[in-house]
Structure formats: structure tokens, C-alpha cells
Image (cartoon, rainbow, N blue to C red; front, top):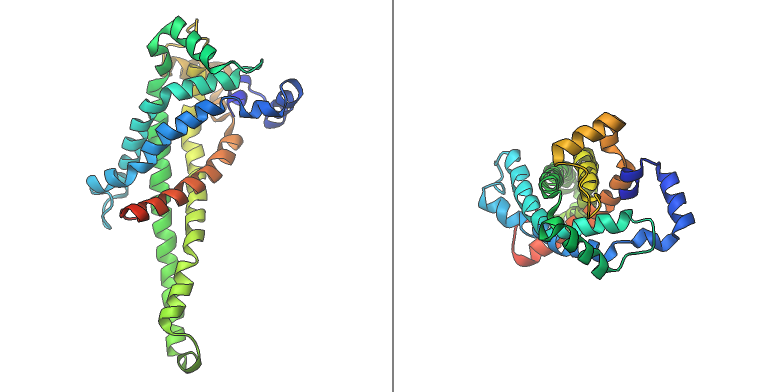
Amino acid sequence: KTRMQVSGESVAGTCSGIFKNEGVTALWKGLPFAWGREISYTSIKLGAYAPVRDAIGAGDKDSPFILKFVAGAITGGGGSIVGNPFDVLKTLAQTNKGSPVPLSTLVGNMYKDQGAMGFYRGVETNIMRACVLNATKMGVYDISMASIVNNCMVALGANLIQIGMNPRHRANGPSLFTVFVNASMNPLRSFCLCSSFIAGFFMTITVSPFDMIRTKLMNQPTDKKIYNGFMDAFTKTVKSDGPLALWRGFMPIWMRFAPNATIQLLTIEAMYSACGFKGI
């Protein structure tokens, strides 16, 4: 995704060039920084969502859906500030087409050329991206999950009434309680998967432009400044490559978001339950 955003090549062309010139292992460039980003940014944006949502009243049954987006934006924006240094270093590592640069060298060069603030280049764009991403992710997941569960429960209720009114089931079949438990609990995992997939698609649509500009800002050489912030990078990108360039790398982003969102949201649902918080 990052290589496509920088080079403008297709998925096939990007993969072919990486395999030919750098080998398969190049797909894992920047992995330590990606771990650091997930530990910091992702932990905050997901772990803090339920407490923040409940604190602002977004967890109430009749609360306006916009509050769910606000809760996601707050936790996403906060997490992005903590994880920004890892994002900068990950971008530089992934766009490097030569031999992998050692961690100490990459960090040392950045600090020598730009000081501590170099690790926060593009932070304003990263905050905007995180707010949009987490607001879309948690909001769409929350809303789609509720819609799917409610619709399925209505259908399930109709089936239970038919089962309860059938003398054969009352005499020989399992109890209504057993039928309800077996019918209602097993689909929950499917509900989560479906909701996560929907959230991943809408995340890709809303986040891609911010992701593109973030990559442009973070991929600047450590000893050179090409863009003067978000609007400058946005204007130059659209002027040189056209508006659709903002969605460059759409498929790789979606291919990452869909399974990533699914795993994260299924995990956080289980952790919320274990910690006593209401599920998303």
C-alpha cells in the first residue's frame, strides 16, 4: 500500500518489483515499527472506546449515532499522537528500496536531521486520519451490528413462536429455552464478522485520502522538507496526479482493513465482556 502510494504503480507492478529486486522478505520491512504502532495506537483507540462512549452517553440505547462517531474520533485521535513516531519510522522503512536500514540508524538519522519533532512530522494529518478511521470503524460497526442483531432477533422470535405453537415440538422437541440459546448464541460470531467487513469497507472509503497525504508527509527525506503541511501536500498531489490519486492503494488498504478490523473487533468484544463493559 505504501509503495503504491509513493510510486503510483499498480498492485501487480508493485509486487513484481519488490519480489524481483528485494525478495519476499521485503514485505515485512518496518515490522518492528508496526508492532510499536499497534501496541500504542491500537491499544488506545480500541481499549478506550467503551469507557469514552459510556462517559459521553453514546452507549445508551436511544443515544444519537453521531455520539458513537465522536467517541471513536476521540480515542483514535488520542492514540495517533502516541503512535506517530512509529508511523513515521514505519513509512520510511517500507519505502526504502535498498537493504533494510537498522533501527538505530533510522532513529539516529531522524534525530540528527530534525530533532525530536521529526518523529511528529505529519502528526496533524495522522490525527485527522485516526479520527476519521476510528469514528467510521467503531460507528459503522456499532450501528451495523445493532441493525443485524435486531433484524435477526425479529426473525428468530417469529420462529420461536411457531415452534412454541407446534404440538409436536412441545411434546417431543427440545425446550424453547434450549432452542433459543442454540439459535441465538451461535450466529453472534457471524454477526460480528459481517459487521466488521462492512466497517472495513467504509473505513477504506473515508480514510484513503488521509492515508495518502500522511504517507506523502512522512516519506519526506529526513534532511529535506518537500511539503508544508496537510493542505500543501493535498494541493500538490491533486494538481500533479488528479483527485483519484487520493484513493491510490485502495485495494491493499481494504485487504488489510477487512481482516484486521474483524480480528480486532472480535477480540475487543471478548475483552470488553471479560472486563465488565457492555459490548460494542
